[in-house]
Length: 297
Length: 288
Image 1 (cartoon, rainbow over the protein chains, first blue to last red):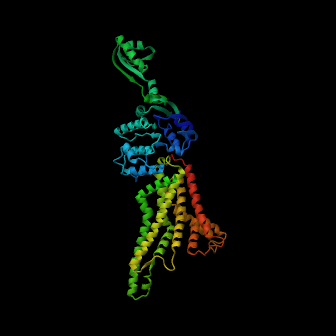
Image 2: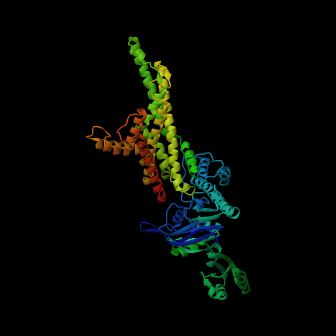
Image 3: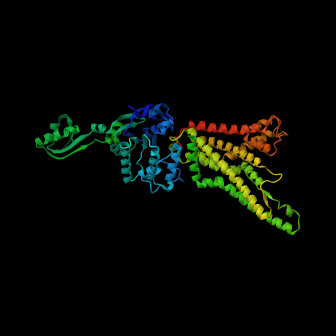
């Protein structure tokens, strides 16, 4: 299997603070891979190391099979990390032209990328007057300019309005599905990650605590909440898989595939079901359980 | 790849109109303004002298040599105030990415060595343009003076500078400015601050001026042995080169020749540039 990014026992210390502590993580090529973690988990540090901005204290990272910082590999990726900053006297078009020159691009499709991120009308305005969301869009266009195989995005929707967030999600999905770009996305917005990512890794205190496919991770702690009467009949049918929730409801810890049979059995037992819904099958639960912040719920 | 970095740096520098004006346009404009004021004053004085029947009035209307004007203007670039304006460009080019926190966008696109060398090359181009504008400013000031005083203009005066001397002076001024630019690159990378790069001429002026004057105390010939080692200072290297240019036969000391000074200046530029690149390649860019 070829990997977009490999990190082997990577450590990075700033004085006595360990930003990364023996992180080992392999991100396969293809699809959208999310990196989750509380503040200080090491997400941004990992990106900085991969991009060659800082050197790891220990361990090794590889990008598309090449050592971190290798310029040939870096030219095959695009990245938007931290708050985008631009030279304030340049327009969006100037900025992309300058970055295209720096990358050695002979025929960059600047107008095409400006259109794709929704900045055509503002293309000749100085970046100084841009909103945070517009700067995010410009940063994305800059990252896409070289038609990268891997796109690294750190909080790509921060500062965007709701419509912009939806457009960004659609664009990410399109890039991954249509253009075959591997997207590595770090975000605090668990809902966003669950919606757009195929796989996810959860970091905590510089270490990997959990990784896998989003659908599989969220399925593990998913439960069916049944509001039904009589409740005891429900619990009797569920046996060890059932837990009471108040006087008239119960949780059923069953896979989705078993739900139709359970409902049928309850109907046959003349149980009156007023509500049945799946709960807990979200990344937030997985995240809080993994990072030891379950008490915060 | 270095050509890519050079092209990108050129684009961003010449789009910064304020920086371009202050680093390239201001000093030539001031020199033209001074030429205009001098011409007006001279016309006034010559008018009074002619009215009084003073023969000096005719002498004052001698033709202005535009070549001399250009040589003097280029030669004046070693004045530290003029250097300060050139270093506005160096500061913007070399330390701008620390100020605007834009390194993270550039470093994945080219090697660090190319990124920094592209900046130094851009400062070299800016220096060439600045020196040309200084020369043009001197020529325009000379023309204005000639028009106002009624004296004619010639390109080259009989006893004046030659075209070769203008070219030589241009080369020396370029090397002097590039030595400052290379030092500014080291300071910009080491301190991540534009102000450090900007104040290079002041620092160099104070340190070299003080050190040289202290070391020369008590010696009759300012460069007699063992003082020839002072030629390690770029300011004396350029002085020697200029002396050799104006009077090729003149040697400062028998064992010292202008090629030594030339090699010394180039060595300074190369060593400082290499140091800046070495530092930048090892720099942690988490904090910009």
